[in-house]
Image 1 (cartoon, rainbow over the protein chains, first blue to last red):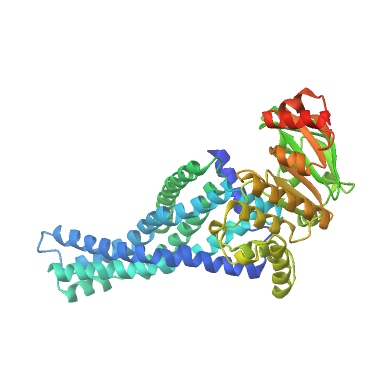
Image 2: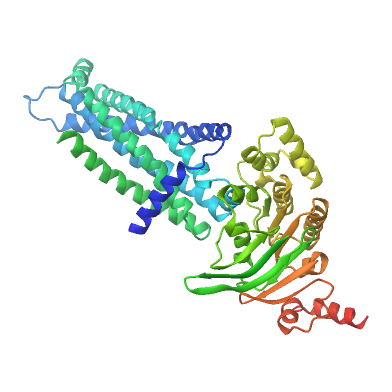
Length: 243
Length: 253
């Protein structure tokens, strides 16, 4: 375990040394933005809309007391979406989608000796492969903005069409006691998750050994470790920001 | 020319190479042969700088590898071309992009100059009609030819090939062998080829190094491999009945 942690941080160091030519890197980053960020927007939007709807329905159905105001549905939906659902839940989803893609693509390059080919040419393969992914993933907060917006929108739609509350009280709930610090907190942790999502799968792909079957195994291990690290980092950052 | 002096390599206290001393000549196709596990691939990876020997020294045109500075290593790497066993072409790039790749990464040539140089090499390996195809759209033999084109596009001083014929039909294998030999002569390259293929040994083995259990068992050429009475070599090279008959005929004549 400690050996892996050490190797992981050594890999991170290699990401920033002996950089690839800027003109080449520019193209690589654009390609990764397309694959990792734009390619994830669809699933993130879809999931966010429906999970936002479920959150608001569950909140509305669990309010029995007449003393609890109707705008609580909007308030609870907003808080759940901004604080946890959009940044954390989406990061776990992306650990499956983006993480597996990164591990399998780099792992396949390892198996088919493409990484050796880069090394033989005198190219820093870690920088060439991981840096563009890392840079592209720093745009993850943009994806999370979509997730937040569509999650709340999904909550609003489910509330109105389910007849749980009026549109006015839902919107009043969304605006109630809004604290911009919560959005900052969400973006800070999204940024950290982005680094985790780019580097842990890269590590598992880059240092994998074996054949095609091991590529699949490495993708699974990478997903598990990404999820574990995201959950642990989420705990510590929440403690740090709110205690 | 590449000289190896007393190269030792071990993994987890298991010796893989046990003091290899040899010389790979410029302008010749130097073959390294031996059974699986004899240390051929490890030797090639040491030559490529992917593994460091535990003991011994490699001289590239007289300059010891271990005494080279980081800059000299970088320059040396640019003088090395490598053809991997599985071609190792970049899947997302077309044939021409694969060939352009080392130049784009390592040179400051203009795009027009690079394309011109790449097309010359692609034409040389007879793939000009397939230049815009992706690696998965061409045959194994064509992929090997792209890999050769990529390896020689930077006009290397040293060319290393790891079993360039594996997985190819005999006719295509001969095409690849001849191509490597022609390019070796044309560009005066020091070519080192790891091979299992006995046709390659007979066709292009200008110098042959036979490894057995990490030791240099025999050294010679395709001319005198027929005459050798080294049992390990004859067991390996003439393991098939066909080659036994060929050898018998050769010796009789």
